[in-house]
Length: 321
Image (cartoon, rainbow, N blue to C red):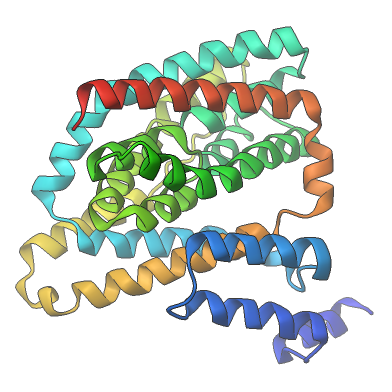
């Protein structure tokens, strides 16, 4: 099939069994029965047994959908809560980022993981998973296989975190504040943070989203640090501009009276958008991505994730209620 034929097939959505099952998964995710964990599981099943019919555009669609959905969640917050939450998480975030980068460097040396791959895994664990990897990789001139391995490692651990974090939180009887803070610090990607927190409660979701997006802004100083470490001149740091739109949504939600009647609707749509995002992320976790990750990078990722998860949980239990 040539390029014209493939474009025509995509645009007309020519029905095939693969596409039909894919869209059934999409529909299920946006119904009241769709949950973040179920969406991710359905996506993984599609990737393993059916195949993604639109794999070539999955990454781009997932990225846009995540950003729009996160901005929508901003309409469920207010300025006072957001400022207090961001302030509370600042020192915690700074210490955790520095610790992960140092430990990641040491583990990379011990396991003899390729330098740039190790650095990307550490950056993804320290800040915001795939977004950090995507932002840092061009700055350090990472190759495609290095990016793929880092992304595969992070996405696999994200999938596990989305399922087990609510279970652990419930068993330890964590408060909404504690769980929201723990998710924001210890889970890599924003989508999985929001997915796990939303199953725990609205207050946990508010805290997790605010702290995670404040954490994501650390991509900017990390970008400059990366350029210095790898001695790459003229590299541009990608600023996550959608975070500023998230902040604008919070301001509008707080100070524009007529939005009060629509805020709940916007937030519910945003939550469904994030559920659908997790489905698409699952659809991208095919066998090749998992196989390419390799044992040593995954081992590095697991230890880093275990360290930040346990350290964050201990700190939160001690200092947050």
